[in-house]
Image 1 (spheres, one colour):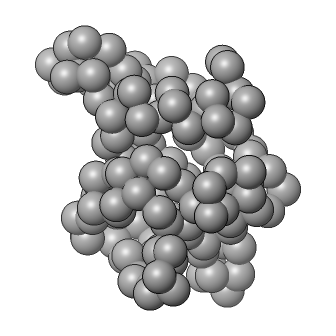
Image 2 (cartoon, one colour; image 1 turned 90 degrees about the vertical axis):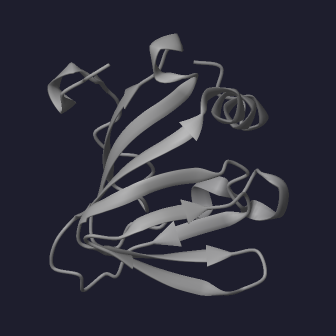
Length: 130
């Protein structure tokens, strides 16, 4: 099944003030119960405070994806970090956070795939039942 970005559901145009983003998503059985999300993170975005209510303050959802533009840093529960940049494929196991450089000069854009059940469990843990 093919979907253009314009066919995805538009999400928030800005998240918490410390993590400005634009998000589009698509889910459903035709996508193998996966959620596809296109993110745009502004320079200085930091997901860490938004994850504070989760165990260890880290995202419990594994993600697979591709970095279309820019770069961001992923930090894992053991303190290791890796830098993702345009052209990279990625896998982030459960237990991560990420942030972009304040001085990046451009947004970071990633396309990410996750299990719908994992995302719903995280939303429930955060009290978001939408």
